[in-house]
Image (cartoon, one colour):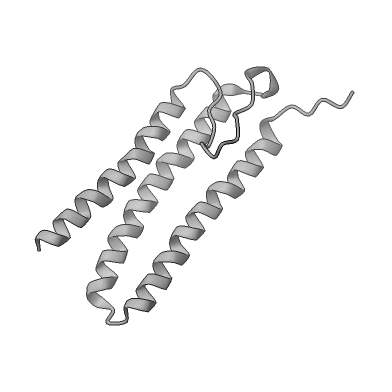
Length: 119
């Protein structure tokens, strides 16, 4: 039981990092980034800095919540499914899906909100 509590606390803290990051991004006045090494666009390159920051912040808040849910479900699957390999495969698919969702939304946001100067 102690191991389960420690697992849940660590899962909550890891997920909370993304939620806090998302909240900070929502309230940021300057354009934010996804922290992949790619520099965020400048304010003058965006159609709306507020919309950019709100969508990024929302994505990180949702990702933090989904991550916590995924970690909890993985913990439950370890107890309920006797096949550890199956539960690990399901866990990996869920995490990869969440990261893919963030990346796809990042690409769509860039297409929608970055001004393309064709001169």
